[in-house]
Length: 265
Ligand code: MLZ
Image (cartoon, rainbow, N blue to C red):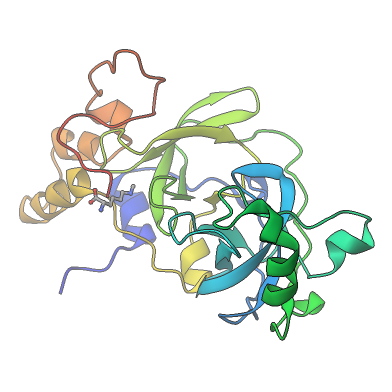
């Protein structure tokens, strides 16, 4: 069996520190996830954020729900924290005077939406209001510093949470770099993004934290053989930028897209 990833060891090996809890828009203690597969709720359509739609819980992972919009296909599932402001109990939209909308890419004729809505809600198991948790407050400032470690959602594979390093800081934004993946999955996000978590989050929620990519695990085993890691080993265990600068990706935004030969899935 492969050795289990340990943040304690990894922080020592990489001589780095974990980003402090107060940097994140996450609750100090992850919210409990009482939801069950099959329950329905209202969710903002990620592809059409002015629409509130009906969603069904397809899966549960840690403090997150895997959601599928009713009337949509199975190719556009998305994940939300139980304390996300993007989800609410069924009936909330109507109470606020709004109307439930068909999802972008509604599979049927638009004229069949009212009947579809009635049918999908008929006899549905609705997620109880008490299961929805209040969104945590925003951090007062962007207090991330380059080199700090964190856990982050891989936006190309959003079910995965992976070890990451702050690669850059600009205003309210941070550049999230994924350890061991040579820049292929890196992205900029706001410091109050719900996609980034403090070190230790997954072990608290029961999520499976992914191990760092190969660029790290290879050097990790060589570090053991050599008893004291060489300079090269140490550097390659840090964030991708510091170790192996990714060749300029012409015509692409920095951090988006992948270097040749590396598959996204
Ligand atoms: N199947 C993919 C997963 C990569 C996940 C990387 N996360 C930062 C691959 O092996 O390319």
